[in-house]
Length: 598
View: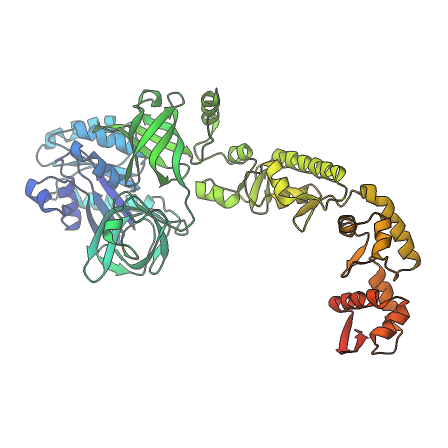
């Protein structure tokens, strides 16, 4: 399957040529047929002699309908450029050539129509058209002279189209979907139907998509594919490149229109600001400060901030689903001619609010490759989610360039990671020195201090720094931190319990050692003591020592027997036994007995 758009001056026979190739009338509107003038987009299809299926998008040639022409030409990968033999190259031929160049279309053919009317002019018109197209992707396109009326050259044209389609680039069927809508209407009994050129990806019945647009449904509206049609027939699935008629659930026809897009959910970055590079036409420093930018079938007002002649920042009146490398056509807001074409370099450009930022940005953009600079995108942020880069349209290889690494689903700049872990280590050390009783630096304080560019990256920085994150606190397990003023009291308590492990201190003894709840919590966090309910404080080794004694008892045993075996009081024995129960080392047999779990 393939889609071919026409291009060329008004009344040079584009619609007549499509009618002769397909047997379908591409002029849909009654006014078009009455005036003999294509006003809006027309659609037709045929099967070539080679068996290949091809669809056509017929565009208007008149200057007043330049926006409609760009909506048809924008999503199409192949163009059939038409010049009439009896009139030769004309004004709108140049406009359409500029549009083809701006879009970067490099697949197509040149057709000299109405060859029967002025056969003697065919060589000169061909040479002129070749010269005019020399600076475009159609410079070396095949050329044929035909007459749709007499049939001269039509079979050769069909064969050439077959060869062109066979050699055309084939987008990946697994790619994300972005279907730019060119029509929306209601079919009785079916509901809302939209049409567009599916340039990549696959559509299937029951697929769930997201609508991005400005016709009332609101960005992010969820829709479902109820049915699909292409070339006049129902299908279960459509792959690239094809004309698609999509029957949608969850949307009225009035809520969607030309310039909207159906998207794979979560797969596209919506942006109201992009940095671009001039590919054709007027220098960006000489364009109006406000113009119309065409992307796919969308046409939006854009403000221009130039960075010299070849680079600029465009700020759109509404966000668009764009990716790095996308072509945009620029024209003046009151103009019927194309100013030029640009390619998107950055869909998430940095804020420029300091003196000299514009000059620095120009230098950066001049050095950037056209397909997106992975290293630049990561290093300027420090880190970015890998999936976010994919949404931007930047290729992420399995083998990363030197200086970048993968951490928890993010691509991280090695230098930035080194700086973050150094800073975090210092912050944790400062926190421990300032408050030895602290359980560590809080997660929020650490994240705020580091000003990490993406959520969820703190865990990776903690791991890289050799620190640990426990109960929302970051601490350094390698640092044998003391307990400040409480160190003497805890040391004294440790010595006492080492001599008599089941004689937990009374509250008066703890007070005499100046050990309150905060000091004991800090010691427990460092593994120095074990805190049980009712302020029973023992050493962390107490449970294991208790199990040695309890295992010697006749099983099952009573609480009183356990208390006597441990040489302790009921106040201490009960919390300790419950602690052993909770660990699964002992278990209750009945209300008065326990046994050791073997």
